[in-house]
Length: 398
Image (cartoon, rainbow, N blue to C red; front, side, top):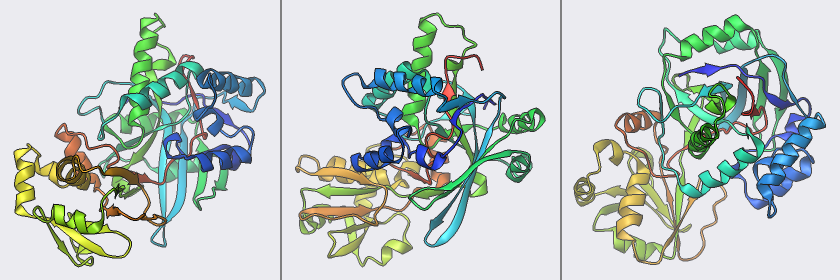
């Protein structure tokens, strides 16, 4: 990978009330809550409203720069970031660095996607980038270091300036730093250049950046300019730095009895406790009854006949989306929704909730190394890096 320090646009005060989650995780009620925190909360930029919403976002972004709500750092820097969160009452930490990454078409050994994308979100984000000439949110880039060549994060933050420390309403603690020491930055870049990157979150943003690069190149803009780079948060997966949670499915339009009857030819239904013992099992429930569901030989043969590889069969969303929803429940009038959190799920009548095991990072690596992209909403990386810590201008030289 090729990364560089950059002169970030950022808020200088009150980050707690200025940042937001990534745009694609925000519903209407959360948007209203974020807007109430500050008239300058970044959600007003990433989810603009109105007939001319993209133009409005661009004008607002540059207005905040003119009013010095947002200021640009004088030194080119990388920005170490650390968060503290709980999983099953265990406190964990995520750490990584924010920097700019040299755009490249997807290529094995350089940068690789792991999920499919759709055209509508890319069109939406392209309009926003054109209006703002900036990366407002980072892409999550994952790499796996070797034992002999890893970034010493503690050494980085010891030589960094702490910019802010705060907690957000979701209970996550945040520490945000700036490092402008050229020697330490070069050491980090020299380590990272030997690794390839898998996109964790932000597939649409990355592909949109490629489209924006083509758009600017066609306009005849100098190839040295910022549109050839993208804001990325880089996380070393070998350090157990981030958690992988499951994205579950809700299927409405069918009750559990009928669901079981339709699937029983291909799946075994057993006591729910068996879900915990088998990583390939699913857990289905209507809120009153639950079953652990495992594939029979017929299901495996069906997937074989579709040309599904052994790597793909280990991905729970392939089983649900291709076999259950795509074949067994096809044309049965059901609707599927995705849930990244099952704590507050309300299961309506005539609906079945399917809980999945999280995909292991090794399975993601195997998938991308075999040129396979997973169904959309297959992974849920947690926690999310807040939007608004840093913004990367694309209309300047890097």
